[in-house]
Length: 222
Image 1 (cartoon, rainbow, N blue to C red):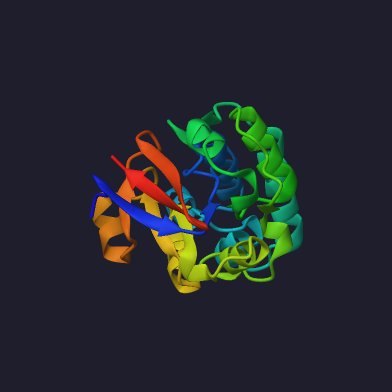
Image 2: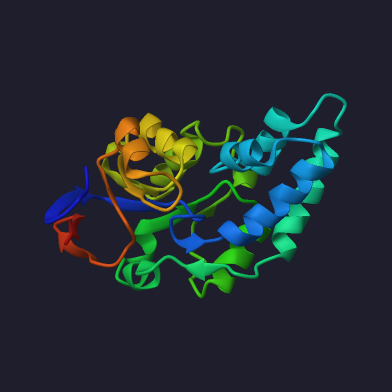
């Protein structure tokens, strides 16, 4: 369901990073293709399965038997940290973030902290005061832990949080947290998004606006 000419009322804003606030597809493909080829894995499957997940979770799920999981995850993480070529802002993301009260939004990403900071800066986006990364949680997406932690840190009930996501694992995590999930069409098709059941989807962040409403905020989609 495309969100058009409608609005939702929320108390905080929780943003995934890759595919939601910024496009990091090119360096992600370079890193995971290289790893998959070195490990004799199907590249297309690896690129599909890694979306929205922590590096360590992807390596555990996909690496062949006998792989040193920790070593491979560390090397893959460093490769991603070192490569920000082609990282760009999702249209409208910077303007929408600038319109929000800084104490009411956070980034909740599967990336590690250094990678998240590197990519946000490369895209020209602010590093928020509250940045929850894959380093900060025990269970990564599709578990809801990161979004629950984000809502708690912003003193909001999960059901009053707007979660912006792009991947299957991320949308599932937001829904499992009980948040109001809005999907960004960058990783999945609209049919795949509809099947997951978020509140709706938008193609980018242009046209989003927010206005205060008592102790909450209304997001308007136009």
